[in-house]
Image 1 (spheres, rainbow, N blue to C red):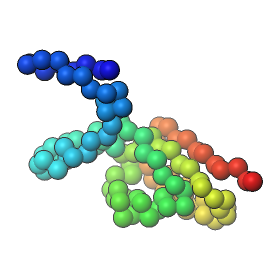
Image 2: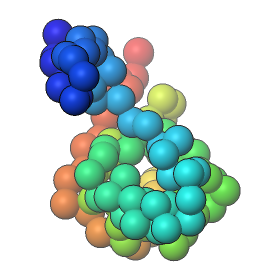
Image 3: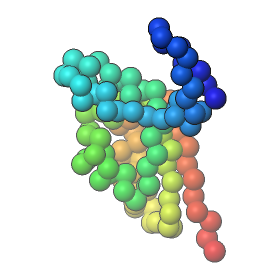
Image 4: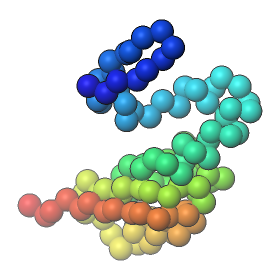
Amino acid sequence: MSTIRNTQNYVDIPPAAVNQLSPALLRSCRQIYTEALLILHQHNTFSFCASHLEMLVRYGLGEYCLPDLHSIYVYELRPSSASGWKDVFIVLHRMGLERVAFKFRAEP
């Protein structure tokens, strides 16, 4: 257990909860959103399926945040064509990556 101290007492927090991403704080006000969003993007590893990467960026994260993403994990569930990977690398090139990991499913 990790222990977090507040002014009243000690609180035990399960280890799994300490490293969880909690973006709900971003909804509290516009100033917190604009200041904390950069931290959220730069200090977390985002996991994407390669075949859905472009759609997730376009309709989920937003293209404006690509330069702020520093660490990603890209996985592929099914074999894809080289042309599909070209689109993935176009998106990856627009990111400010420091770390990237790939996982490919082995052919049966």
